[in-house]
Image (cartoon, rainbow, N blue to C red; front, side, top):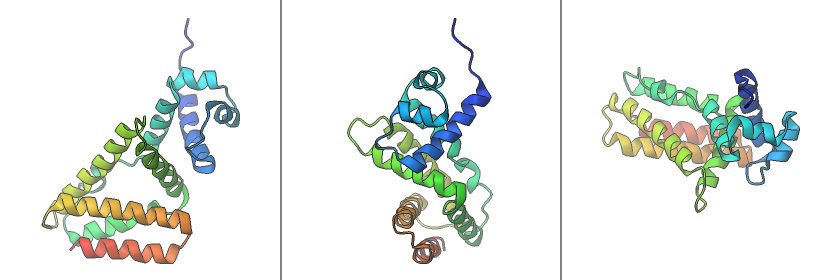
Length: 184
């Protein structure tokens, strides 16, 4: 008889997996060292999540903000600029930075042929672009989906720059300029 899932333990494992990936990286991730660090076994991880890829996708899902509602109440360009700047700041420090570090690794891994992360990465990008497109519609910007794509891709690139270089001032100025020039 299969052991029932302990949902609190499962949630704790997902949070710990995100921290582990942020600290150790995704490229060489193996279940045994991960399980040892989490104080469990690879068998238990498979019991809870079926596959390593499913474990990672579920861990990432716990970190993704509710994008569908992030820009839903935007009334004008000034409000959207402020919300994007708040989003930038939330994702460049503390737990937000950990989530971004992991997300960027998954997006990179999704570029590999037959990657198990393609579907997740595509949905994550698509959700962010769609939500921002709706926010941009309130500003009457021309081609809101194109501008949303530019903002999402540009901010993601600047986030990666910041994580690699550690240059807070330059990347903050670049993010602010990207937002101000595209949300008018």
